[in-house]
Picture (cartoon, rainbow, N blue to C red):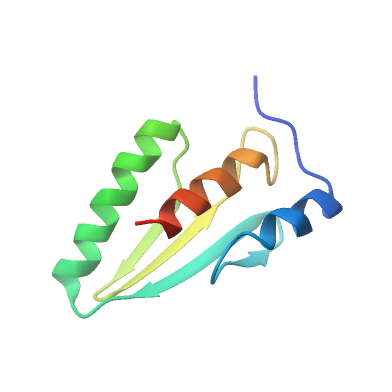
Amino acid sequence: MAPGLLNEDQILIQFKQLKDWSRDGKEIRRLIEFADFVHAMTFVNSVALLAEKFNHHPDIDIRWNKVHLALSTHSAGGLTELDFRLAKAIDEL
């Protein structure tokens, strides 16, 4: 069963606990820039391990030293607590 969608008030509360994330419709997004491709890939591999642990997988776009992340619970049709929990864990990397 998919986690429940958050309402607008719940989303705003969750955003107060995040750094450098923005909302784009039914997704939250973050762009992170690294010194080079190797550092970007090291980070992406760390995100992959977190994603497996959470059983929740972000959309990841890698452009040399820039990593674009997008989180949404597709099975629920939008943002859930799981998206924000994973975003917070990513912020701790």
